[in-house]
Amino acid sequence: MLAPVLRTTLLGAARNDALRRVVTTSPATRPVVARFVAGEDLTAAVRAVRELAGEGLRVCLDHLGEDTTSPAQARATVDAYRELFARLAAEGLAAGAEASVKLSALGQALPGGRRTSTDLAAELVAAAHEVGVLVTLDMEGSGTVDATLGTLRELRARFPTVGGVLQAMLRRTEDDCRDLAHPGSRVRLVKGAYAEPAALAHQDRAEVDRAYVRCLRVLVEGGAHPMVATHDLRLVRIAQDLLSRAGRGPEGYEFQMLYGIRTAEQRGLVAQGAPVRVYVPYGTDWYGYFVRRLAERPANVAFFLRSLTTR
Ligand code: FDA
Image (cartoon, rainbow, N blue to C red):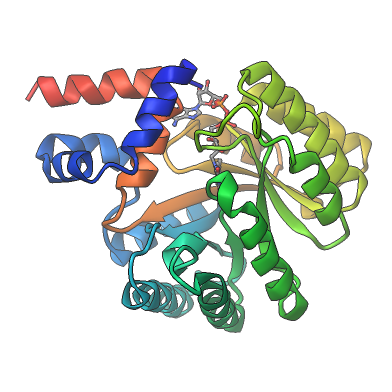
């Protein structure tokens, strides 16, 4: 993680419209964005899926979008996912693939949005289910956790395979892990990508790491299906040890990493027989996702600034 002040500033920039316009219209940004985003359209996403599948990697597709400002935009998001599912099915790539969606892209923050986003998510999950695609609800800022877990509970009553995401940095998460730690419960455990106040979240990276291990232990001991989503190789090793001591085979968990990050290690884990899923974001609304990736690593910011100044 970057120094907290710089990280918070960058994460604030993720919601700054003026900066969004500058960054998204600069041609210099494109090559840097291409490291983290598979492409702006479905064809590029499918190409990436095919390549990853050829190397024994599973995929989780994210049609980029968040903070929807109108019901029409929320509807368009569901339609984009429907198009994705149809295309994956037509190309023989649907079975076992996963899709991730942010409830803010389905209008969660709009008036009455908790209901509408849950209904739209149910429609999206039903469409995914028909072609054998799993769905996981991404987790956003701490103010949305209760609503998102509520939607997850509702969806799971009809579709038990729907996955949720828990952020180890949040102080509440160990309790949330206990609630979700039961057989069949797919839970993606991440460190957390949003700027959160100290009252709600661990600020020190060693504390976040320790919380991650405690949460993982709760999930494994409770019989959940953990999706260990981190590029932190120390945590990967701890997870391998925990999972093997719990007698978990490759069908009982998976590692998850983001497209373009730790690519050699993704393949290395596959070579060891571990199940690895790569999160593949695509679409034109990549700004927020991109800024969060910059905020995770100082070298990314330096690389990005160099690319802007050397053209
Ligand atoms: P950490 O940040 O400590 O990184 C460990 C090492 O990994 C770094 O030293 C570096 O080498 C490498 N690395 C990490 N990030 C990098 C980057 N951006 N560029 C280059 N190298 C990098 N968060 C959230 O709040 N809600 C969510 O729904 C999700 N969903 C999600 C899905 C998947 C599949 C993953 C892997 C992650 C998420 N996240 C997320 C993001 C997560 O919360 C976290 O911000 C990042 O994974 C970075 O944390 P690490 O665990 O990788 O550790």
